[in-house]
Figure 1 (cartoon, helix red, strand yellow):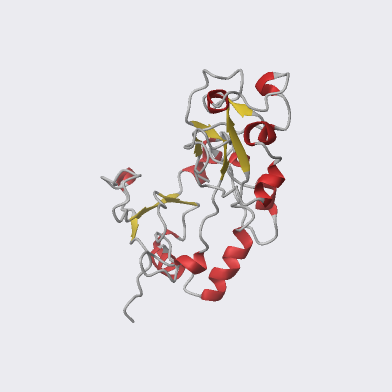
Figure 2: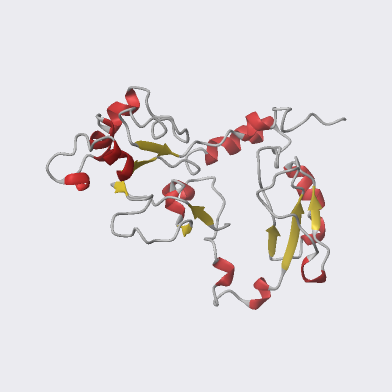
Length: 241
């Protein structure tokens, strides 16, 4: 897996400058563990492929025969500026090139020259429409079903600075470190706040309203399903037969 980069710490309490209390000098962003952004136990559900953690290939226990058997794949950026454009073929080898909007059958055909490689390194998988499905609505829906929980993470992020700017409401006697974090920051228990329709994961809807009565946000928004993306002609145009 690629290394994840987090711009805010994950903790079940308030955050000081997006950091855990006592770690205010901690450098952001940082390489964060998988359970910060995914539902890690679900990655072991039936149907999920085997995976290796980021940095696995840097482990000295991995045999050189694996580390040196690498096939490289360059994916067209299609205007996505979040990644640097490739400038050369790595290690003197010609990388396999995949167009933006490829399907799994496209990839299987293009990657045939790499069948003898132990590792296939894909340089970029970016915005929606980079991958346009399995070429089968049934397979797309099955994929969505399998990955829905693994790609879900639900966590509140409650900010001390905004809470103080609001006059430290509901602070009790123990300052910002008392329990019932969401109650303290938003005036309701978290489950009640969700039932009231006030939580939309991945949407900034509270902290940009200083007088809004809530100094928390929730992450993360779930990605759109592959079955939906593959039918969206704005990102996966219909191909000529």
